[in-house]
Length: 283
Image 1 (cartoon, rainbow, N blue to C red):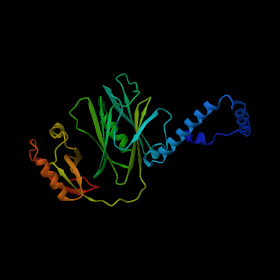
Image 2 (cartoon, rainbow, N blue to C red; image 1 turned 180 degrees about the horizontal axis):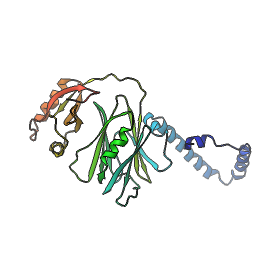
Image 3 (cartoon, rainbow, N blue to C red; image 1 turned 180 degrees about the vertical axis):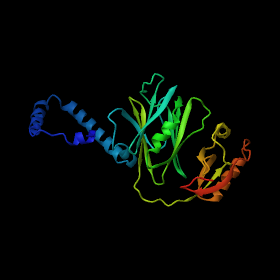
Image 4 (spheres, rainbow, N blue to C red; image 1 turned 135 degrees about the vertical axis):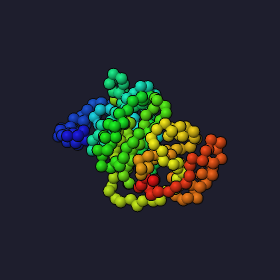
């Protein structure tokens, strides 16, 4: 039985109403002020709870709140966690829910998640996870755990030259929604996937991209060469990778961005304008 079910099935004694009334009459004179404070706090908590559960993504994440841990925040993109060093990143999977947990060298689970960043791209639908202060991640296990989920299409690692950071990319099926819940004591992230099953019409997307390249340090070097650009790496249909800038609805928008990029002193002609369908990988 879940926590929610246990709560809903609590039996309320028949005498409880009269007991409360008697206690209130006896304590009214000497506890009025403290009771008002207590009631105000309860009302504030209820208001906050109602505000949270009426945010769809947050409500989805709270459907099956784990018994262990305290919620820090719920997000779809952004960052969180605490500054750490030498953390190991691990994973576990249950139905439509994935847990990313963190441990130290002696295998103790950390009280807080390390500093992390979550980015979303829509063509194709994918999530980028990056963890700083983390030096090891079993990428094969992370991939295997995420690939047990029917709403996940692919998982692959991120090339990061910083040896104190690790990351990976999760490619979702079209129309799949997600939420990331951060917990503390112990620290972990819960990734919840949902879908209404409705078909999504693919759209044509224009982007700046490079020629395909194998997974390796050249990817990280290219990204560091353009520190002010939002460069992400996308797996191609041939299982190589291409650096991508932007997701534009027209070729003209992409061409304007390319002209802007070409003015940079570090630009070496690596990028060109290409297009593909939002549910596919470029060639």
